[in-house]
Amino acid sequence: MPTHPSANTGSPAQAHSVHPSPSKKAVSGGLFLGACLLLIAFNLRPLFSSLSVLLPDVAASLGMSGAVAGYVTTLPVVCLGLFATFAPGLADRHGVERVLLGVLVLIGVGTALRAVDGVTALFLGSAVAGAGIAMGNVLLPSVVKRDFPDKVPLMTGLFTMVLCGGAATAAALAVPLADISGSWRFGLGFWALPAFAVALLWLPHSLKSGSSAATRKLPGIKLLHDGLAWQVACFMGLQSALAYCVLGWMAPILRWRGLDGVTAGFYVSASIMLQVVACLLLPPLAARFRSQSVVNAALACLAAVALMGLVLAPVSWLPAMAVLQGIGQGGLFAMAMTVIILRSPDPRVAARLSGMSQAIGYLLAASGPMLVGMLYEATGAHAAAAWLFAGLGLAAMASGWGAGRPLFVRPRLEH
Image (cartoon, rainbow, N blue to C red):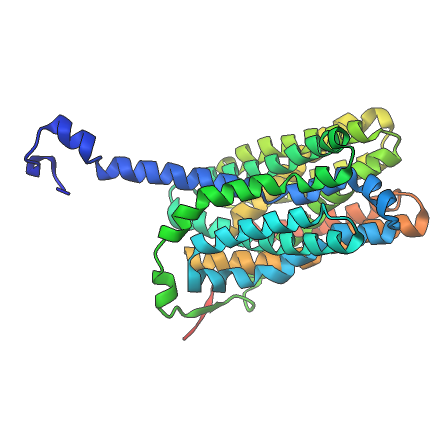
């Protein structure tokens, strides 16, 4: 294809219709890639919020104690930490696009398994889907750094917005879907369908993707020596501990406060939808400043205080607490993803920092919903969880302050 219009021997109109200009091809390809990344992001959270709003029904049907219910909400979060470290190496060997295809398949298969009768299937499906979500969490920031280097804040805001939108959609629809079908299993298993649908859309692109990453030996990258990398990882983990307390226990806490299942699900959905707005607005705004420390600390404080309010505040205050929690938590998550990219000098370091942050961070985050379940089992109430939320909030403020400093992590290369 000619590289300049003057080299074209046909008419301009004919050349335009038969051979689209490279710039238009690039724009079209960028739009397709961006849309697919957003659709993948949509599938990374329904696993959590759909179980949250149905947890009392699932526990009653399967005879689970409060502790076991805490374990089943914690297991996918543990998987996020355990499997996050595999994503960068798999991407180097097979290409990011093909690994993301595997991510969608794992999410779909695992989510469908949860609809099978029995506690074992519930745990197994949660683990399989959690493994897929772990790798998707790690790879999306590196793809943004690689393919949208001039639009990092916008794309980070968009994919975190859509990610939260997926959680909100599942929180709002899981109970009605279960009511329509007459079984909580359909309310859980339904969310395999969008994962498989996006996998089919992504399949041709993943198969066409080059294998250059798999054919050349890339030096390994180590970050465990770097203090800033640890602060980013702790910030990710502590905000995630708060987030998964919300996804796993906000609805049960609201039902403990006296709300019915549909109303509790609506509150959770509304809170997460506000997370969507915060995810979109805050990264572009915060990226204008050299340091994001103040923003990180303020959002951690807001998210934790509002979550405490859901436990301790008068019932008439619960709508306001849900609103404030959604704003704080959404902004907090978006900033945790943003600092991973901003603190990374290149896409491969971004993938490693994302993997480290989510491996360490989600293992730390797993303690949140597990401890809420253990506290409820020990006391028969959720009041004690307020102290847990306060501690997590203070720790997130401290690590967020450090992670927001205008510095790059310093990797060590292994040849």
